[in-house]
Image 1 (tube, rainbow, N blue to C red):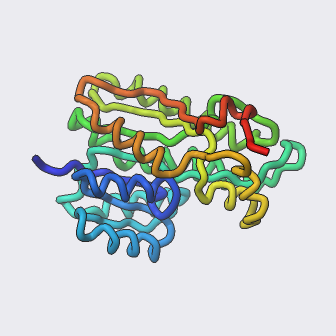
Image 2: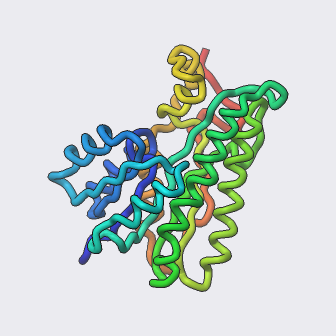
Length: 252
């Protein structure tokens, strides 16, 4: 059986990297995308003995770079069977009245426009073939707003709306669309949000066992290996210690 091709954005860290590692072990070919070419090449080398890997270095915020990178795929890599939109970020944790406009731009450009740019280059071919699966990594912040999460939540609410809209628009083509919305996952997420302040980032997960990138990768693997007639549409996943965006049990 021919290996399916999976394109993963944000593959150089966190959920994207964990997904690459797990799918490589499970008979998938991988197109790994990210901004940091050194990390992409290191990951490609790591996976070389397990599966075939192609890398594309670009920033999802750059529409031209997205178009050029994906159009450059060799013929044998052009049929993307699964798209995992994992690239995303949070910048700052400020009330709206004192928010940083650069942070707002970064979140909207990456979380919303970046996802759209990649979909624009990959999804039409899926629809034409009447086959494919899109995995959008959302967040509990796209289901519930929390204090100071204003623009980040808005960007993830947009991902939720886009997933629902894609599912409707692509229904006739048979292309599956899944939204996976994690709660607290320990990745570089908080380190980026707090501008490299490792001590503050660590406080986010203090007193509880958060999810890991592997936990989400495991869900992605399960989702894309269901029978053709089964689509897991909208999933929310928490660590056991979390009950909502605002309710978290921490050990003393």
